[in-house]
Image 1: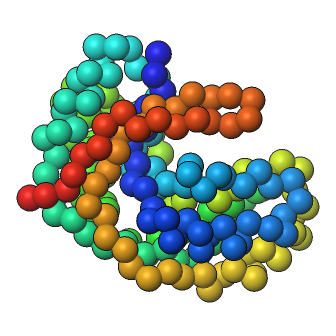
Image 2: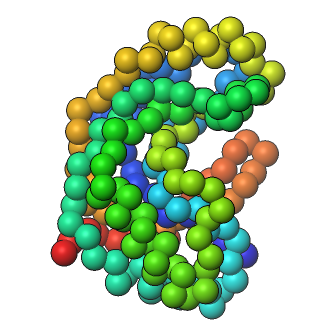
Length: 179
């Protein structure tokens, strides 16, 4: 069964800029540049007929293109041993509206909303046995990270296959924003 998520890709120049931060954390498994994305909605495993319904219902989403900006860094979970390093977003209502429209479309075909609050971010690294001080040093050194705004004019439905070397993502369909 396909494991699905909906995401927005980053421009290549943004990915290259993020790559400059990929050092200084022992035990970090940095995300491959071609895998960097902003997950708008995780769906999970679905069967064939539901997969087709998802592909088709997302076609109905209508929203104008909008700008977002990468800004700041942090880690998950916010308390306890960090497992993920991320870069945040300075977002506004358009990204929230896209998320809301996606949730509404998926609800119409029987998929319940995610149980957790939408926290827009781009995962940079997954951590294992990383000294807390090294994470603190990274966050301190990159705390003022900021990129120029860039336009979002599409989102994508991805399938994901988990392997021992990490997830492999495949674009299943591209949806262009227009209203």
